Image (cartoon, rainbow, N blue to C red; front, top):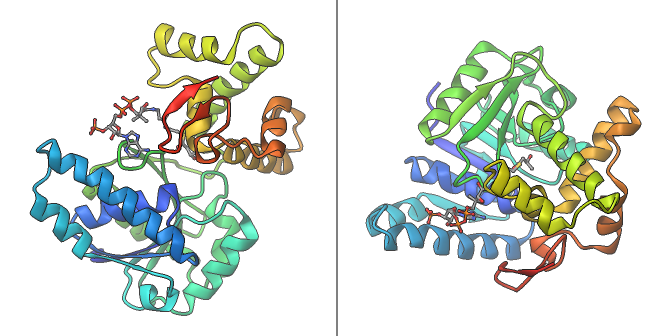
Length: 293
Ligand code: 3HC
């Protein structure tokens, strides 16, 4: 199926960059958020990030202008959904909120449109029956920062059609990403299951007082060649995301080992969520630059 018009719902850190990737690939994109302020922030951030690509000679000014020209930012779900071939949902990681949105948007989207969720924890079988088209619902999971990270995990639920998976994989490739296809649903998918092991060990070493946050990050970077240490990464993706993801995995499995770690819960309760709040495992200035522990 050809995907010409994409609707992205949720203009947070992930949604806005996913929308831009689709616009850069030549598609018309509607980026919808309930919060007009979030759309303004999204546009500012994207203009600055994509502008840097122009400054560095990687993208022509006309290509950037054309991509922004193909992108509509609106608070009206109705306007964004009317002609969409493909929806990517990137709203808050709460199953009830996602189900409400999908049930509402299902009634407005054209019948052929595919609904993909960028959720990192909620498999699409928990959402599909909120729509009238479970065969057209799947997970399409991007990584942060979406403009940079090449991997996108794609997985269907037992009712997802082959055509839905093929279209999602083709869209993934056409926006310059490498699809990783999961053959069955599993909470955490592949990459986040690998990451959880690293983050758990890092927090546990810190809680036991074995080494400082900064030194554990140095070990991950300098001994293992990771681009960021596990604490730096949590600050970038959001400590709240770690908290919600691990809480959801505990609730699903009832396995105590899946619970968020004590130090993560403490940060979450204090509202120290990482770069976006200026404090997480490290402190940041208003531009998101790391100031120190
Ligand atoms: N958004 C978009 N682009 C960004 C960015 C952001 N938030 N942060 C950095 N970049 C871009 C920069 O503009 C720069 O682009 P350029 O080379 O084209 O000019 C490039 O990334 C490199 O940036 P920097 O030189 O400033 O810094 P680094 O070399 O340290 O790279 C990084 C930054 C790409 C974020 C790198 O540190 C990295 O790959 N970190 C690991 C990220 C990771 O593991 N992500 C997965 C998280 S898990 C997840 O997302 C799952 C979800 O379910 C929570």
